[in-house]
Image 1: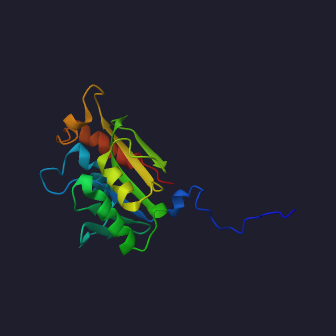
Image 2 (image 1 turned 30 degrees about the horizontal axis):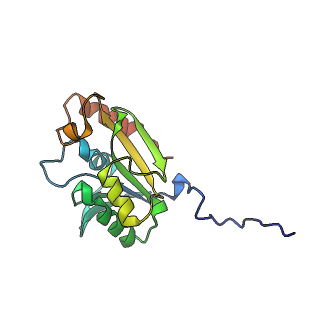
Length: 179
């Protein structure tokens, strides 16, 4: 009987390491009308951590950091997948190199979660990314936005972030540890 052994190559079925992340992509809606809404938390996070100017390329804009490329969609949330796919192609990256940042109404305001290889859980922007990439094998940074669990997500995600909650979100951003 022969013994199989690994020579350091990662199999497609194994979970990539967070160190494989090269592109951090914030989801949201374009325009001033949506700039400060809960649904734009992904883009607000990118603005918070990215240093430097953003360059526009078709359906996304990006800034190159020391260790990461930061990007934001120029399309509406429900069409985010095309922009994400375009960015991966532009930078010659794979889905395993991607961290998608988005709002999550199932997580309490002030909390966050990093996950890999999960479904959209009803988030239309994430579903668009899954549909366009034809995989869910990418990392996600889910930032909690719901203060009151009685509110339905559709009733508040397009409302402006309150002046009381914005500092809490920014404090949450500073606590995020990708590695």
